[in-house]
Length: 110
Length: 115
Image (cartoon, rainbow over all chains, first blue to last red; front, side, top):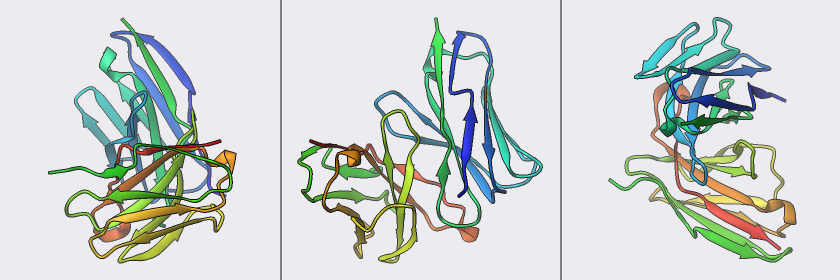
């Protein structure tokens, strides 16, 4: 079945450093979503990418969708302590079923 | 504008029992998806309801069933509970968009513990 893997599993950074998480799907995706989940919280929708090679920015966050629509990345510039949490990608291959990635847990050291 | 709401917040059940979880979608949303999130893992898709019908189902046994009401709210039922059913159950609502690309708004979840 379809699998979505994320690397790294964990990342500790000093406040002010950059952070990137990568998402890889075993199948071609029709679209991909990114979510942030704070400890003890629920996933919060960040963004959705649909087009091959698409790049979207939200303040310090940059999201990319690969040309082959099988991978994606989230890059955070100059991390802040408020960026702490687990970042998940979630993709679908044309159905209504979204497969979530394994997540990357980010810790930011002040 | 209220977001997605779920009840109860926490629940403790005994193995073999049955449980019903409830979800009210965000105003203007007509699609509800249910997810199971085990500790330290990503959410796993259980099923999705649209127009009171189960439109898509994940790899969960028939012990997991659901319902959607005319007001778009939804229930998740789990029968014959197993210890492995202990998890955070998340409901996500979506507005219906063309092309099937659904923006999902999650509720706070119901923490189910099976003893």
